[in-house]
Each structure stands twice: as structure tokens, then as C-alpha cells.
Amino acid sequence: VKTTAVPKAEALAESLAKEKSKTRSVSVQEIYQRGVAAMRQRDFSEAVVRFEQVLSLDPNYSDAKLALKRAQAALSKAAQTEP
Image (cartoon, rainbow, N blue to C red):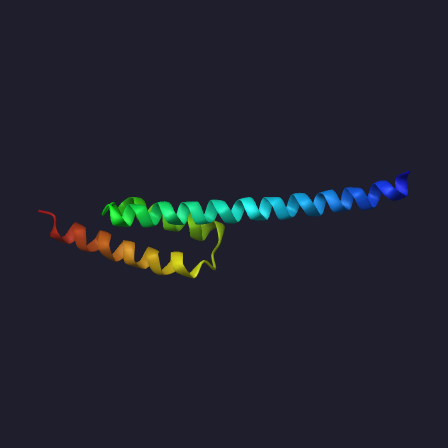
């Protein structure tokens, strides 16, 4: 009984790890899309926060790196033009 329980437990652990990874990936994409939506609405500070969240979860997300730079530049430019 114990010998068959070990492979089942390992398979379950592997399955849970894959599911967690998939969920995390979806979350990263959702947060990224929220950042994109904030950029479209010209809410640059919100966009910066969202893209930073994405990069904290996935530091190699290249689209988020580029988007963060754009959002920071837009935020800086907006701050310079305000009276």
C-alpha cells in the first residue's frame, strides 16, 4: 500500500505545481492587461504600479519591462506639464 501511495503523492504534487504555475501565469497576464488598460486611460501612475507588480512576479516579462519604461516616461512628462 505504501509503495503505491508514494507515486500517487508525487503525481499529485506535480499536478498541483503545474496548476499553481498556470494560475500564476494567468494572474501575471491579467495584471499586465490592467496596466495596458490604465495606459489607454492615461492613468500612468496606475500603469506603473501594475507593470511593477508583473515584474515582481515575473522579472523576465519583457513586454512589462518596456511598458513600465513607457509608463514612467509618460508619468514624468505629465508631471512636467502640470501647472
